[in-house]
Image (cartoon, rainbow, N blue to C red):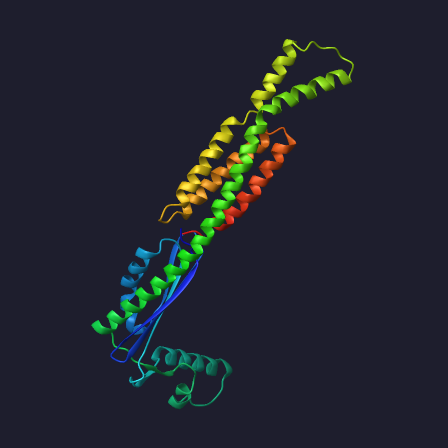
Length: 290
């Protein structure tokens, strides 16, 4: 079992260029991969996305890669599109306000974002290899963290599932007394109103049988026990199981609601409430399982 939350980083150096890869993942029902890459490495996005997709199967994943070389010269670059936008806005404003004056190249070049200096990294086979090494190391560390947290979640989930199992065992033991208690309560009410009734009266027997049939939750108990077994079996698998555990949790909730509606016994109702409380905590944790 793996958690969806984790972080990993890795770096590699090639020809004096240091490549750093950072990858983090958080909860998300589906898979979403976001990337922050230098312009020189933008062509690698598809390959990097495929590599991540083969290792991580669920969650919101953010990859950031940076490349720097102390020996590289800072190359100035001019954002001509931004310069044209500034010029158009200036001329529009000058026209609207009927202001005199000359817009010079010096004015444009002083504006923020027009000129920038950045280290130029040239993508070649060696830099590509460094990117792969850095990402592999980052993924390895991320998976290690996700596995460690997943182990903790696994222990908690199974503990809560066993708690539900113990409560349901008590419910099964209490089930036979439900009809008996209803029969005793019915007789008590009859005598309370001063009515006489034969204990072998067919009407009494039919009423008790009708109640027993209406409040019988043997099938719900059997399905609940089956779902608990399925949950444990699934939780012990070494693959992406989060969605399956979510589905089983939903089925457990549905059966518990039916059981709660049928249980005409205070002690059984309390046990069902306990089961629902444990199930709610299970659902919260399952949201973080890959």
